[in-house]
Image (cartoon, rainbow, N blue to C red):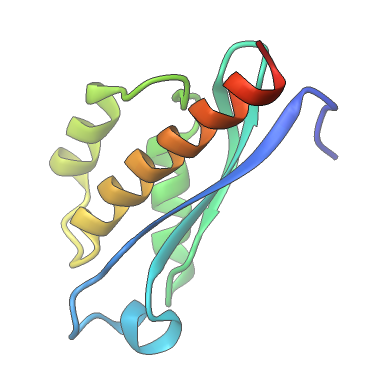
Length: 109
């Protein structure tokens, strides 16, 4: 399904105590499939209690990059996502960027 040049990286962030994601999963995760040739996000899924949340998060990040922090992606989340997991989404993205950079340094440079 995924090209041999892709890797899977997961980032996480804490949600608020009154968030349904916290009740179900304890923490918010985003799993990213990234093409190591150009650092582009080719697919992702996140922990969400309703499907539309996962689809919306996927839409915001698809085509973005994990090669470096992309302030435009962060601003997109701030401008478009008004659920209680907004900060957790940004934190999970930043966490995934850090992990991806380590993977790139160790295996793909």
